[in-house]
Length: 116
Image (tube, rainbow, N blue to C red; front, top):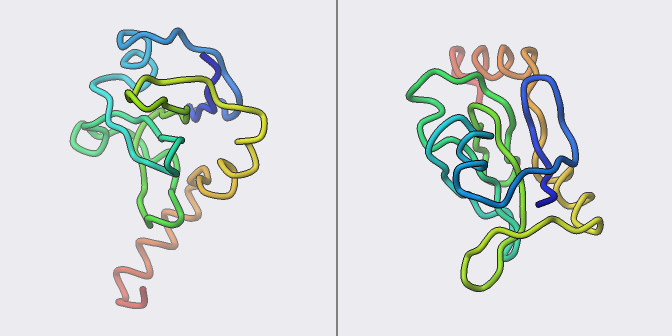
């Protein structure tokens, strides 16, 4: 299955096997889905924050930071994951951004000083 993945060292279109085991291996644990659109989901580790995974991406519209490796794919009406399409890439890049250390530091400072 073709996905748009975010790992510590890589970001971009990747191939993973369309099985629960492969998806769990990619995210490092139980999977959780967050809808980006009606047809596109971000799949991440359900316990990413709890187990101390590094912040990886931010979903701008939802103001949500995802911890740990994650990937984006499509789903059908039954909820089965499917490959992304080439036409999805611009939308994915506009909704999900990799987190930098500078972004995290800035967010912490803003929150600390009550400026958010």
